[in-house]
Image (cartoon, rainbow, N blue to C red; front, top):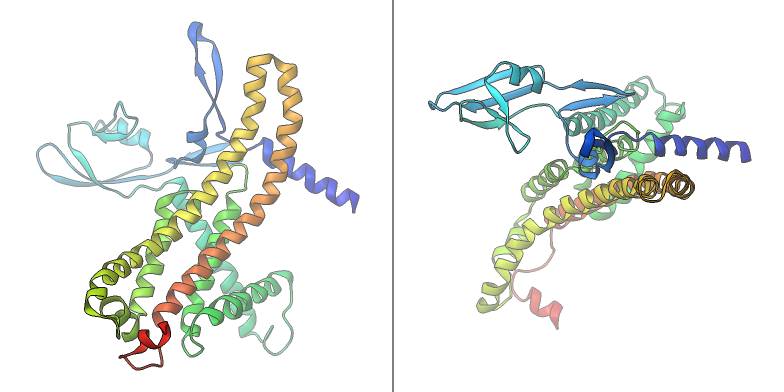
Length: 353
């Protein structure tokens, strides 16, 4: 037991101290390089994919308009090749822009966050197809499930179905939403866990990723809305007319604040966790630069140990945040898809009294 714990601790130490892009070096006066904590560079989206020390630049796809008003759709293997074509240049703000003064209409380029978004959904699809192939052969249907992967799939699927979907959506409707909820749960879990790898990016620390997931939940929620759902947003049966004037704008605003809260909650939690680890590891270099190598080594014992503990906490938070996003999605969908068994008039009066 002690040996196993030691191995886990050493693994966490490796993950802690090998996280890439944490520290950049800038040339100071006299050409000397000074360490700088590159927090923004670590959490930002990049035009390259990094793994095991290798940096692979990703393709750039631009739909752009030149200064003459003509539109173009161009593909380049990387930012460097785009700038080498002399059609694009690097601006003072650090972004790629058309060299002739035009502008990019749509940037469809691949980025690190987009890749890990695909990896996360790909992991969910892979484990689902793998389990499905076994069920088709009768494993898990005619006999008990075999293998850790199939057992894990069954546990998670039943959990999402029974504890999330069935608990928050009507009994005769919940089954149709289980595939989406399970995909969201597994996809976010994979994206969050991939972010723990020392070379990886956390896709859910990007607001565009969490916002996209929240928009999908919003669309499903609205299309699942019953007559009762829309009636309680725009009409409020049994409520005086002057009250409707007040409540209707509030309810309409609430339709949009729910997915907004979904996106911000997941984004903020995953981003803050990554920044916290960078900041704690940065204490080593800050103390070494200010007070000498000995001070840096002394703080390093504390920083690395705390970072290792934070990695274990982040693994737990990664699953908790996937659960919270899925649970709230089910709650919002369940509220919209619910059929109220009551008469239109007098409902609010009866319940308020």
